[in-house]
Length: 463
Ligand code: GAP
Image (cartoon, rainbow, N blue to C red; front, side):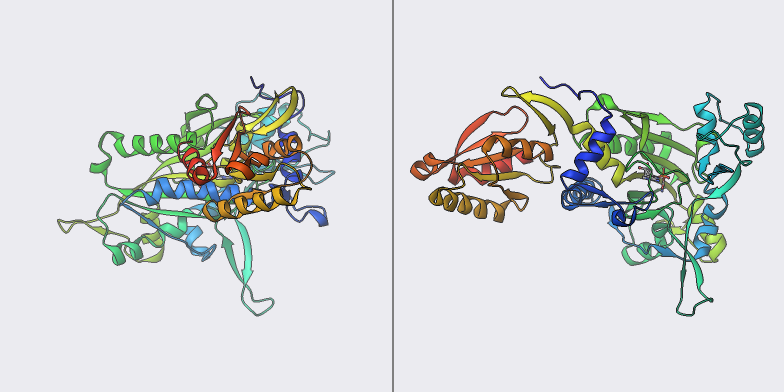
């Protein structure tokens, strides 16, 4: 059976595969790249879409109590003042005095085995001096200072008089500032949720580990509005933790590589009363994949205070209350990265080594590839084209491939995780059946053309 991988850095191999096969490219690559940005190529974009579709299915399409929203990326600076981000959305920064490269002080200390929990900025500075810490290049470092992660932009047509705005640091605030609008338009009963998928921006001091820590990324979030009575005994919080973990496993990721971890008080974001992460076991350790946060009435109370607009909800008994919020929030890029890391295998099939992405068929960017057995037999090619065209109408993620021999085509499809390969051969011309080859086992089955689409779709549905 499969080995997870042979020697070599699994992240480097994945980055190389992503570029070679058109999943993901470095942002602005031809100009030397822009740190913390990645562009999704044709297969990466399809994979993203499938993950988003699956998220919408769980958090929106199969529920009666959630609403979709799509808010602006640029938001009024007051939003971020009210939400606490201009003050609290910070990391401790140090700079190499020679190269001017910047680092996270807490990360450098952690690498030295220092427990940074509960250390203030000054204490971090003292500890670094005590340990005579140098930058990774061996140069002296500046004192740690607070660095805000919000990304600024200027808007307005008059040069020099541009208005400062922030690109949203979390998509959440677009939902919170529209809470009243949704309530007034739809009169939902509590509990209910507002779901959103969209880009967020963070000026991360040290982006890295491929898609893991970037400066521009997409988030998928549900803000679920409740009352203390509805939450009694932590019911909703536990429920949303369960739904989120179940969703993550549903990406096809092995359960033993996922776990929950509760934040200690000092780690919690400024808005959170309680916070749990779903973590994935990456080649660089257990890392945050997803966050489930109890935000209490922090956001609505703060926006009410700062805007002067009441953010209250009127209950059936006429009482005006500020609901509590449970949020479940995850990065799309991290979901894609962890899905790919988990799917990546090197094994042997029919005595030949291969790289295979064992995507769950419903998540795979390409579902089916159709080949003619031989490229130089017009009658085979014509038949195979007709099979391909018919299938593509039913399953849009169907691909045509007639390059190289069959073995090479299988290897190519394995490497991008295509679950089913269909070969049209001379028997097809006789009896209208084709060979369907399954990616992981390599098992082949003869299927009648009349049943082909149903056969493949059922396999995808039950994956
Ligand atoms: N609204 C809550 C919120 O934004 P968060 O824990 O800061 O909470 C939620 O972010 C998720 O967004 C994380 O679990 C992670 O998946 C993703 N995320 C956060 N920062 C990221 C970054 N710099 N690069 C990639 N993904 C990131």
